[in-house]
Amino acid sequence: MNHYDAAIIGAGLGGLQCAYILAKRGMKVVVVEKNHLLGGCIQTFTRRGKHFDTGFHYVGGLDDGQPLNILFQQFGLMDLPWVRLDANGFDEVIYGGKSYMIPTGFSNFRERMKGFFPGSATEIDSYSDFLEGVATDIFGSFLRAGDGNMSEGSLFSRGAYDFLTSSIHDTTLQNVLSGTSPKLTLQKETLPLYTFAQINASFILSAYRLRGGGMQVADSLAASIRRFGGEVITDAEVTRLVENNGVVDTLQIANHEPITANIIIADIHPTQFVRIAGDTSFVRNIYKRRITALQNGFGMFTANIALKPGMIKYLNRNIYIHKSSDVWTEGSQTAAEQPRCCLVSFGVPGVGEEYASNIDLLTPMQWSDVAEFAGSRVMRRPDAYNELKARKAAQLIDIASNYIPGLKDAVENIYTSTPLTYADYTGTEQGSAYGINKDFNRLAYTLLTPLSPIPNVYFTGQNLSLHGILGVSMTSLFTCAAALKEKPGLGVFGA
Figure (cartoon, rainbow, N blue to C red):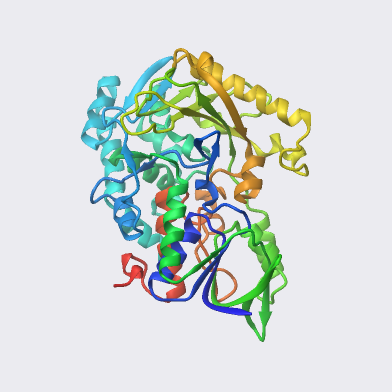
């Protein structure tokens, strides 16, 4: 039986980052991933030579000196082929049939919004100042969160929707400011203000895509882990954590010999953790009930479209098309409805190429829309499931074609995915795009820390403080700091 200083369950972004940190510190590390591919929600798949992303479409705060840049420099990820999105309009919000271009840079953002809404100039200044303050204190806010400072006055314990509607009184402006937020779970009753503010603020700092797909992030981290002497094992599902003499130190692995470790980090959904650790003396029934009662956010329906050569010019921005009057209700749409919104994201073409080779269309989708098919096997789904996917893809193409002339004629192939696809291929519970719903009303209950009920077992990933590339990357620092008994911060990377 092999023994390690640290074993990481799950090779999503957070798990790989934790393994990178600990292996770089000289620890003997192993990552155990149940799927064939690494990366979790940043996986890339290839069809007929074209690369498609699953959940990785663009990132914010990657300019020199900005938060994600600082972290990715530490993780050795800044040498990847990052492509900066158009500073004059990295996001385009289509609301009420009108286009609103969102620029990078807070001064640009402030002036652009005041140009659109001159009657709200004072409110826009205050709102922009607030976002900029959040952006400049991202590390400080996360460190306070990592120390468990979740006071009633913190931005985590305030509601995003209440803040927005009390600060901005023009309802159209409210919706435009929220219009780039299908990348988080917009829920009026629960969404913490910090989640809304930090994610929107980080993209206003700067916005980037990655030429070739998000899988390069996972591959780079895995290569570094191995270079530091660590191991990464795929096709190996951890089925049980075993307690020996009062210490949980053994991982039972399907079709693989067990391994032991001093430290265990779980980059899996807490419900999955309960399934594999529920037999230990540390995981009590009250904890099991609490975790299994947590609600997950909505998933995504995605139409990955391969385009005919030379038909659609590449757009160096995202387009958010809204069909409803209230974007905060779009996450509750059901499969029986026409999509209320559509995110259009272009894959970056080769260097010097003018035309796009692929485009992704996304809209929120509930697990309940596909739950009846959960027992079916991949590639052997019932006809009703395939008909559902075909219908939703056609609806999204109809919406997007109003803003991308010639799109229908340019479609070469369509590959579709639902929350069920995410659950099968990335291991996310109920195919949730953003993990557990964080509720500012029940902060201590829904905002998990890296500490599990088992003293030497820790959590990481999007189900903790914050989802997204930046949120997960920051969380990996907290997890490693907790495991190493050190203060959270960049110091966990060592010398």
